[in-house]
Image (tube, rainbow, N blue to C red; front, side, top):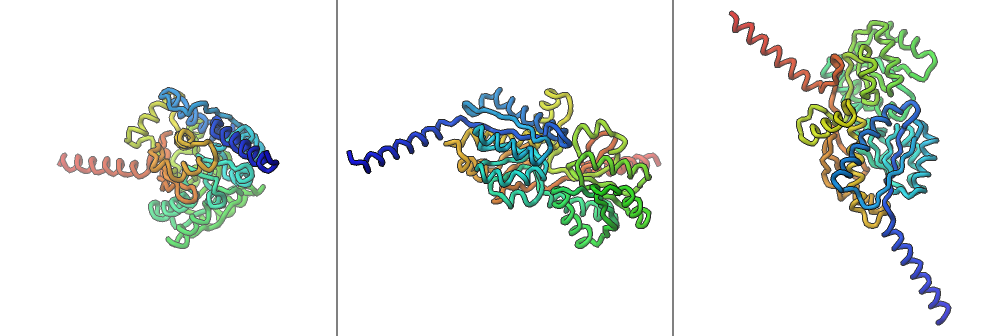
Length: 391
């Protein structure tokens, strides 16, 4: 046999081995959550949602054959998240559920390209993430939608003509503030009287000065739980009587239970999860979650549950288990997936379009604001009817 022929046959044999190895590769799903650090409460909720989805698939016998789950802790830190993502990719994960903050997610984008790994996020919301990487998908609504909804709510629903913004120095805040201002100020004629940067050492004095000078009718707090609670303490201490609106990032079940007086009466847009949704899919999830964990699911548990269900479906249909096949599955194969957070269908960028719903906290309960208003109006009408019937 000529040397050229021998080399050609050897090359074909190597290719065949590689193809067979790829076809036989056991699927690995990476699970990268903030189990420690400032975002740990969000990570704990997401882990509950993911575990529930896995348990349901196990009970139903629908888990992909030989699937492995590899967990990692981002530590609520972008650098640690990068290290852990590389470890998960080395362990064979081609799809990682990335339950991180937007700052962590942004740091992960170059590593996704470097390792050719897909990320599916139940929490990161900065608008640029999906536009900057073809490998980043999310079931959580973009901050653009949330900022617009908050602006319209304060100006139109609450008839507030002025607002004071409190904002962290974060990807989330940079994604939310511009669309909020665009709606509240430019489109609807409201006035933002100032912005307090929560990373400044003298932010409390800044807030006191702006409140004294302008007496704003509303406050918009753009931050995660820790900073949001600090602002609420300040506002309550100053007997602020305007409308207080926060972002969905402040809310977790823990916050409501631990700080009932601070959060009473606040409003926030929440991406498309309503425990009072009457669909069987939602009520079965809520009932099952309460039975399993002894408390209600929050938006992070619900979005993580949906992310895990989508991931399991895509992995079960990917043949071979490769990034390109998984990406096709996310982009095209899932169709309109019925999630507890709404229909999940990714656009060309990897985003879902779930319009945020306004919620309020009353007597320790998280209530759909629009439904709450309708119920209160119905009660008022009923009282008026009874009053006239007595005459």
